Image 1 (cartoon, rainbow, N blue to C red):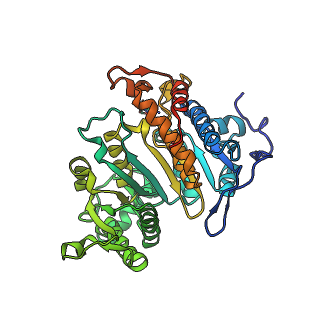
Image 2 (tube, rainbow, N blue to C red):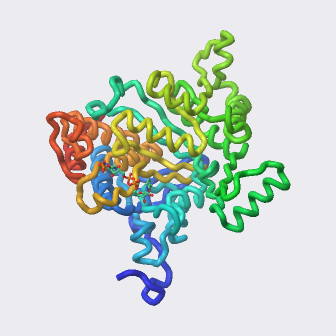
Image 3 (cartoon, rainbow, N blue to C red):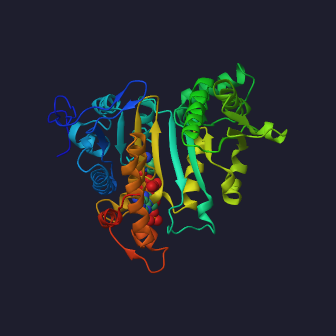
Length: 420
Ligand code: NAP
C-alpha cells in the first residue's frame, strides 16, 4: 500500500541490531569486532545486487576471521522503498543513522530526468559532506575489455563531490529568475548573454579544492602510489578549473612539501627519490592519455564534472560499469556505492552483474582495515571471472563463458574464495 499522510508511521527510525557496536572516530577509525553498518538496498536492480554483495561480504569475513568478527547490518531507507514506507524519498533519520555509524553501503537510487525530485545520491553526498568520490579502476584478469593491454590501466579517480556545476545552482530558460540573472550579468557585469538562455553557476572554491586534493595526496601516500595528476580544463575556465590546478599545487607544496614533488621540478632535473609526483593535465588530453599511455598515471584528482566523465570512460576500458566500484568519503563518514544506476529494465530478474557493489564492499573492508577479508573477496572474483563463470554482460563478450544469474555469480565468487 503506498504511504499516505494517514497511514505513515509517526516517526521512522532505523533500529540498530542489538548485538552490534558502533564504529567510532577518534583520531582515526576504530572498528569493533561486530560493527553496525547501515545499508541502503537501492531501487531497480538494487535488491538483487545488494543480496549478492551481502552474501559475498559475510562469507569473506567469516572465512577471514572464523567467527571472531562479523558485520551487524542495519537497513536504512532511501529511494522508492523509503517513499512507500514513510512518504519521504530520503528521510532525515536515514541520513542521521549514516552520520552516526560512520560507514555505510548503498545500492543505486532512481533519479527522474527533468522535473521532480533532485538526485538522492547528490543529496546524500552533500548532506553528509562526502566531499571526495573515490573510484579505483583496474583490470581483473579474464574480464573482457576493448583494449589490447587493459592491465596497463590501474588508476584511482578522486572526483570532487560538492562543487562545480553539480552544486545545482541553475535557472531555467525564460523564467523570471533566469531573466533577472541575465539582466544582472548584462547591466551590472557588462557580460551580455543570448536572450532565452538557461543559466548555471559553476562554483569552485579554494577550501573545497584544497581539502579534496589533500585527501587524494594522503590516499596516494598511504598506499605507495607514484603520482597524483590534477585534471582540469583551466585553459578555458581559468578562474574555476585553472584555479583548481593552482590551489592543488599550493596544497601539495604547503602541506605535503617534504613528501611530494611537482613534475616541473623533474623537467628541471630533480630526482623524485621516493616522493609522490604531482602533475596536471588538461581534461581532453587526459582522455587520450588513459587510452594511449595509461601506465603513466596513478591517482587522478579532478573537479566534479571531469571526474564523472573520466571515471566512466576508464571503467569502460577494463570491463564496464558492472565491475567499477566507488566510495564517497568525507572527514569522518564514508558511503560505498555501485557506480552504475538502477537499470530498471532488469529489476527483480536476478540477472545483472553485482561486481560493482561487491568491489565497493571490498573498498569498505579496506577502509575498516579488514584487509584479509577484502583480499579473500578479490580471490573469489578473480577465480569466478578466470573460470569464465559470469553474468550476461560479461558472458556476451567472452567466448566459452558460462552465463550465471546475479545470485549465481555471488555463489561462484564464494566457491572460488581462498586465503590470499
Ligand atoms: P544504468 O542504470 O547504469 O543502466 C544503463 C545500462 O548499463 C543498463 O541498461 C545495462 O546495459 C548496464 N548496466 C548497469 N548496471 C549494470 C550491472 N550491474 N550489470 C550489468 N549491466 C549493467 O543507467 P541509466 O539507465 O542511465 O539510469 C537508470 C537510473 O539510475 C536513473 O534514474 C539514474 O538517475 C539512476 N542512477 C543512479 C546512480 C546512483 O545511484 N549512484 C548512478 C547512475 C544512475 P545493457 O542493457 O546494455 O546490458
